[in-house]
Image (cartoon, rainbow, N blue to C red; front, side, top):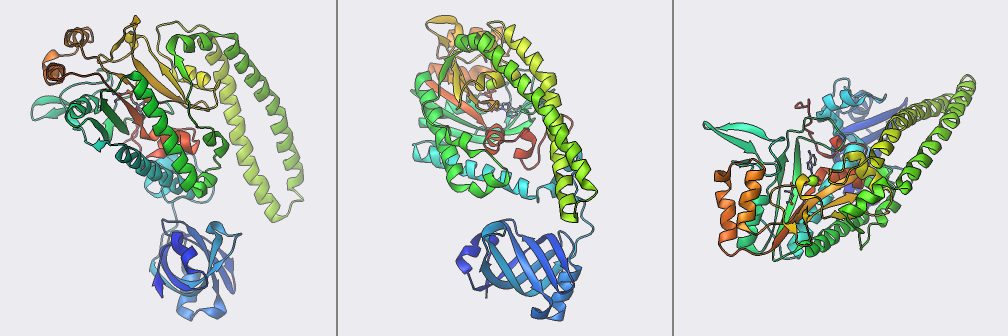
Length: 499
Ligand code: 4AD
Ligand code: MG
């Protein structure tokens, strides 16, 4: 008999195998138990018949609690109706360890509770799906760059200088000197691009974000390609190819995971070249336009119309509840939770949308887009958009100016569709040393720590560009989640350092 994993069961049809894992779920009674086993690679239903296993095995099946660890042997049968498409007819069971009453019960829990139990929450099917997609994206990122002549060259995490402004720095004590957890590997990436041509960094980055939003972590992973002899246009072409490549891989390999998350994959299938390239000024006009105003008004009207429909369904379910059979009651209960969640969402949207509408209309050229502005902008398009040439004032010191308009920087952001907003920030880098010295001074940054960076402009300076993709923002969008917190195993947020 062979030990295998649930993921591999398709290779063992009608054969006897051994699986090792945990009890995800158990039901049954007198002579029969259905145990859904979880082994990290998937779920499979294991059928235990009293007549077909010995007494010791039956005892294990009877006593095993949720999350108890067990070793199961049995025959693999194809069964389309079951999770994973296979079922195990159990021949023997062994207990590894019995679990105490599980901390996360099947009833629904609030987010705070789940976040406090993140170390256990990770075992749920939903988290399984998200982490597998995260893993698939990571693999594709490496494949894409390795196939395109890039080498991975990592930047340090402990640094002596700020990259993305001084307001979000985590300062630490470095043997008596001040140091910072890196906000971005870019400046080192530039040095490495001058050494190796095309590089990408892939590492943790840190921002002391002092506000709670659904898009911000204090610790997140960033992928930062940096390319010598690339201008802004080439940079935009690259990011487009890159994102299309990642989405295609996830669609090809993660259908089960996307299904678990109930992701609308049609929206992902529309992620094709070319991505609209929207000049900042054009984006501002669109934001302030009647088109945006009317789009929100329509959405508000649609949400208001949904309220009485949901209420009617609740009332109707309440009426039916008394006479309902047990299984129907379960269904009604589950639906009630869904409806309540939807009602909360609607309430929140009806609170937010009028504010978003106002602030979009009153947006002033020169300001940075807020989260809601990005959300509204992306709703006009069916795929990611690249907004380029932002006002230099709102961008970092290292950005090259637009030769056509000195007020603008040759920066670009990729905004993901369906309201997700910024997932990539990047641009072409300034090469003029005097300009950079002025910018460093204008941003109140200490010139001494940038001496090495300025050297890059002294010794063989060339046009170069790059960008940074926030891994968790990418995963949030691909998985269709409403918050970034579930996209990293142990999220670090304002007010959250444990577990
Ligand atoms: O736009 P940002 O700040 O750009 C840079 O750091 C550049 N140095 C990158 C480069 O050109 N090499 O950050 C890049 C991306 C954002 O678009 C976003 O996806 C992600 O990093 N990001 C965050 N993700 C989660 N939580 C946060 N607090 C984030 N801040 C930025
Ligand atoms: Mg940015």
